[in-house]
Length: 229
Image 1: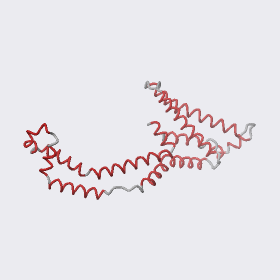
Image 2 (image 1 turned 90 degrees about the vertical axis):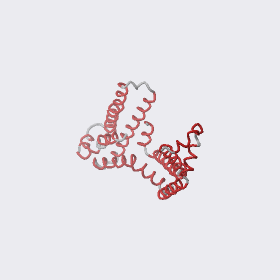
Image 3 (image 1 turned 135 degrees about the horizontal axis):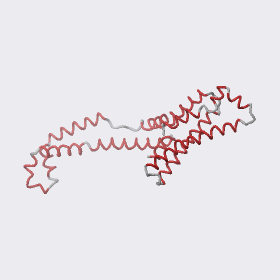
Image 4 (image 1 turned 180 degrees about the vertical axis):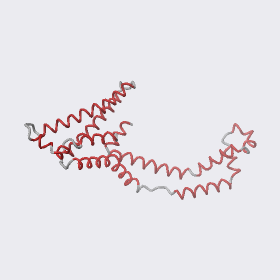
């Protein structure tokens, strides 16, 4: 998903622009063949070899693993083929600007970085930042208040917790004194006391996660990654 485009950029960005820089394109243009025919031949060779190497290699690996019969796997193979052809076509588009091999490679690498990392990250930050985040200092203060409340009603907390298990009522006095029961009762008290603050953090995390998932739709790489997952 991420390295294949770089490989295609390395091979595809210089198919025509490199020959332009080296003067080979002028010699080709002097021959009785149109430049369009030359371009289609070079692009077609790149596309065929890339599909055979990448998609064919993936299908061969799945065949050896005994997973090739799954239609879902074949659908993923089709998506990967489209991904390969997308970058081949993009390489050809940038090469058609005739900016030279170095400029073509730099442009395609910048496009790769933008589509793969920059766009989804920037959009996610831009949308998630205005979402109000609960105060961590407030959570620490609530934890302190919960601890104070626990020690003010320690005996009542222990009794209330063991009362949830009536089958042990006849052994309650002895069980309340055990450190295990005290720890369970204390943890349950803290969880209940801090539940509103934890729910606020969880709700904000869920909202940010939803926004980030939507922002992935702006990146072809993220879309393909989600489809493969």
